[in-house]
Image (cartoon, rainbow, N blue to C red; front, side, top):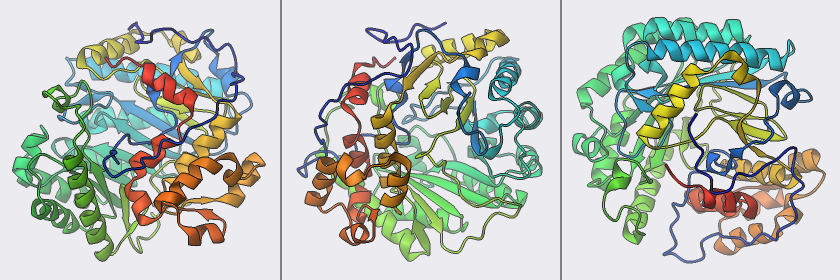
Length: 479
């Protein structure tokens, strides 16, 4: 097993009683402080997780959890190439037999996890991510769906199923399998339709191949097409950004995600000299491109869901009993079950996963370790983060505030018995001072970011992290 990169392992035999530490708001106060600090898609980030000692049994972890509307996530850690900006848990290619061995391990894990959850587990949504799930062959995708349905008990014909894909792997036979098994959403990582931008992002692809892949997705009849685009690429201009936006809009996708480019340690772009140096000019370029993209999509009939996500107005619910076009987990609440060595799982008291790394060498070791595990290894949680009441409040606030609809204060009070305005008075005041909190929303009981607040989501989110989480993430040694 890989050695975890932690200077001092933290032992948590049970839920910690975290002492109160006054939180100092870290929201940028000046224009030169970067609005691009971190993409907060979960709270806290995996870099805060630590080895659990002792390792709690999953049947005990899940014993008292609500299990009537779980989210199921299966992680496939393989890609045909690794883009220069990517720091996801994925490896390039797979030696003969590795994908089959990985699915063998995934099935062993699924059997043990399903037993730990018990017969009452029901799933409200399913997602296959990575990596690139469509790196698997059509037959392997059939098997992945079988694991979700037969081993985990998820009815893929009755709940939303979202799958990530790349243009090169979105082949007709793979898409046919996904459509037949109930996929309601296919997310295609395009990033740019402009050839020199794709090369600058170390994303080898031809526009003709991207367009052909989009045509195959539409032909497959999967109800929701999402296209990912990136702004801030070296050499990108307002005109070339508009070219990519218009090329994507020509396909009338139900969803579009606009991601700012990040250059992170141990990635292809991160190895460039000076890659980690502050760059105020780049920050201003990214903000300008974001605003241009946002405004163009809003004018083109899309509604903003978050800083990154835009959904075409009037998109009808996905056909099928109880299924909707919703694609994002309700991260304010808990109950996510992860399969695969790059996944994570959430309960009310514990967030847990396997070891985490970014470098290719380390990821290969973790994947090899996962594939070799006996079934009994999957009975316990190994690496994780114990939640306490304050952390749960903070997570709920962060994950709600970064959505365009904001946080209904009544729902927060119903869950926690307190008011967010009291629990986070200093933090929220900082948002008001910057003009990033919508006063009209507050007057009707909703904490909602202004358009400019949403534009700064990657600074607002990290500012609400607890001192405990911030210290743990800071102590993590990237590898």
